Amino acid sequence: MTTDNPDHEHYLRLAFAVARQARNDGQHPFGAILVGPDGTVLMEQGNGFMPERDMTGHAERVLMTRASKTYEPAFLGNCTMYTSAEPCAMCAGAAYWAGVGRVVYGCTEHDLLTRTGNHPENPTLDLPCETVFAAGQRKVEVIGPLLSDEALALHDGAWD
Image (cartoon, rainbow, N blue to C red; front, side, top):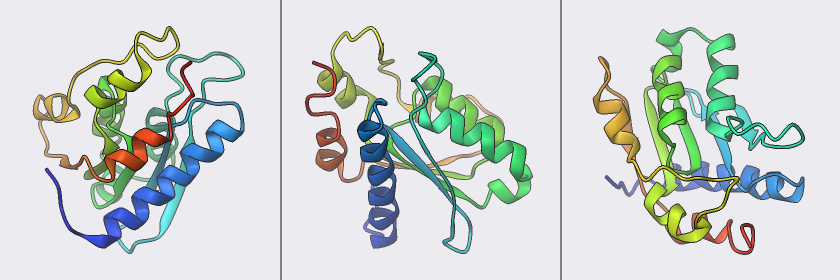
């Protein structure tokens, strides 16, 4: 699903900036932000793989853990998570359980897999997040892929 809403592109590029900063900090190039119903950026999160080599330290999962500790699900239901790449099954599950109402993402998991290959630090699940959300009891709106080429460019040379 795609949309022409220019605000989505603006916020997605903010998530890309978080991903670039994560890479500059020695992390994997993933970033996510949480935007409130009034358009305020509430939180941002880069990948958290290093220094402990936490395979569950995905930007989206960590962001949703922080968000669920800070905000009630009723509030999060009116919020949007913008993320540089489509949430994997774990991250989609975290977004669902936290209660976020909308996810907007850059590149698909499938396209990410073609870029990262069989890298041991990113054994990508080629599973659309919409499949995970569809198994739930409440709706999570999904918008993406958007700005896919920009999102994929974040990974150039990162997985060599």
